Amino acid sequence: MMVSIENLKNFIIFKDLNERELLLLCEIAKEITYEAGIRIFEEKSLARNLHLLLEGKVEIRLRCSDAGYVVIDTIIPGEIFGWSAITDPYTFTASAWTVENTRLIVFDTDAIADLFEKNNHIGYRVVKALASVIGRRVRALETKIASTMCSQ
Amino acid sequence: MSGQTMVTSDKLKRFSIFKYLTDEKLSLIAEIADEQDYDANTEIFRQKSPAKNLYLLLEGRVVIKLKCSDERMVVIDEIKPGEIFGWSAITDPYTFTASAWTTESSKVIIVYGQLLRRLFEDDKEIGFYIVDEIATLVGRRFRALEAKLADMLCRIKG
Image 1 (tube, rainbow over the protein chains, first blue to last red):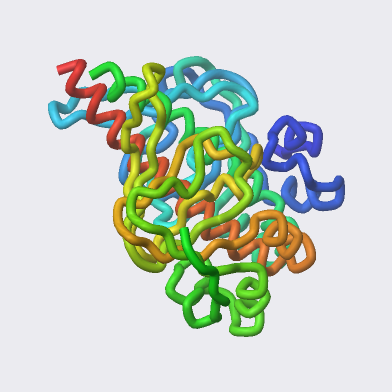
Image 2 (image 1 turned 180 degrees about the vertical axis):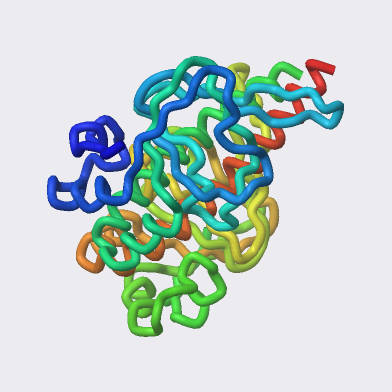
């Protein structure tokens, strides 16, 4: 399904782009729906797509050595996940599962990398905003880990 | 903390975030950077302070610490030569959320954040290649922390 400019405007990583730039991104974006309880991608698999959550809920899970798993993050609408797709070494380190019926926008890794190479101004603005998003997630994790360490 | 010296393009080449830049572009970065020596056990920047600079470690060792509610500090990361720290200077909201301390005498390249961000705006090619590398580094840091947290949670669960 085609993706509209309005849909892309829901995401902070595109906040500094104008309509013409957003249109270029729409051309390479796809909308996908999943039912609840579906694995979107698997830990250690090649990261082929960047995912933006429009509706629903997604859990990021990591495997424990005893074959069980732990939920390390829950993604809500307006958030991005699977950004291993645009950062080296392009491999997912966790798996993503839908916990509700879910609607996503996905970008193919090669198509988005190609667009950024040809249009450095778009690449700069999107990746800078993405680095801020990842940075915020890093800080949230640091705080969680520090609070566990502080309590020991 | 003692004397500042000029930074050369050759020194910048030791850092992977500049790997796609030509000598000409590197010289633009060198113009907005200084080299700084720190004694061991010195605070380079403090948690919650404005993130004014990006730091590149040339020599020595730096630890990143977070404050507990009872004022104790816990080490959450260790920086080795060739690595960068203080990337909050590049990412919104430009505030340090942890403190950085030397654990040995250290030599650091300081890149002035405001001038760097202005350079990115003027030259989007430099901006794109550097923020892309920084996003990769921040992503790697995220994955390392994610694994650490998962390990803690798995142990609690087990």
